[in-house]
Image 1 (cartoon, protein in one colour):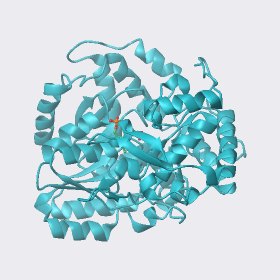
Image 2: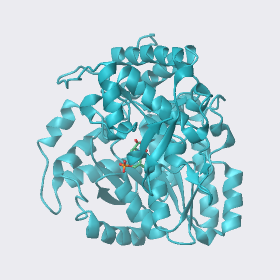
Image 3: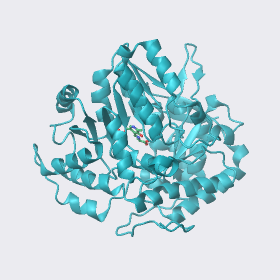
Image 4: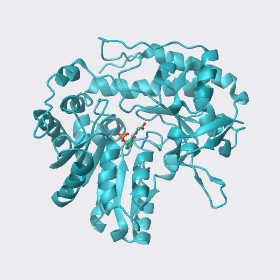
Length: 459
Ligand code: F0G
């Protein structure tokens, strides 16, 4: 591929969705009504929605055409077979279950393997993964490499697991008490950073040695494969798909939220090599999700997923995807915005602790930035810091998260270059108002996943 400075979107737009342009005065009122938590905003009040890259992709004309062929039979639908074939081709795992989204798979598999006294180990458990594990009574421990916790430091694979810590934890807890090691690719909560094949292989050796389950949380496996091809010498001549296939070959199973790299708005799967575990999971699936050939999905969802899972590995698409995310990040970095470096696959992560160094962590600098981005530009983002991961000690004092990040997650194939230019301009304003931003106080919060519904007031 020729290297031009401008990376074009490798698609044409066939259908459009209107964005309602709002004024700052309007946004002040909307944000107050949403209790300074943009999760509580209606989407028509948002101009650029970077809340998540999950389920927000634009589907291709081929996927829409596939939707018309959806087989809505309760059992044995042809759409299921197409979906299963696509997944089998990618993972090589024989036992596959459809689920409506990632967390349904997590609840089934980790709920079954978890329970009191069990430990799960990951580079970083995503919030729903952690919640499902903790809800089962088990504990979830994150052991990404130290370099991954330093936002400024360059490391090609900041999502890697610390292998020494892994060995130590297995020794400390006893291998029989480790329910699973979960490798999240890319490492979403740790900054969307990739994991190297070398690391994935080394984990596999350790897990095999101790007979511990090893699963891939593979919702961004294609994006991870891009980084491997371009940063791990040995893989430079492999296709993105071959790289992903090799990664799947290392693990005992995987859970995919297809709402990311399968380019669909809804869907997911659970894949396993072990038949007995599959049978247990299948029974649980049927109780709450649906029969084993649809698992909560419509036939049309399964058609779109079967196609999207192939499209995502197209080189032009992946190149545009990763480079356009990096473009935003690089421009912000040039402006002096402190951010997680290097730029990850699906998102740019701003280091709000440094940007708003005048706001103490117990006043949530990340949430302050989330609010500012909305107020200044109608941009919706999410805090990945102490609102999401903070805990309280016995005296009710906040135990902060390791980092105070704000994620600008970029939906796939949705926004164009001018949207991104606009976001960059909004950041110029954020930078010039940087000292005026105010911290927040939580006035209402649920027990689990508090970032979704907490209410705040400005300090
Ligand atoms: N694992 C990872 C790494 C994720 O990023 C997500 C979802 C899940 C599991 C759960 O999947 O939403 O389909 O149930 N991440 C979204 C996000 C919500 O915004 O990053 P789900």
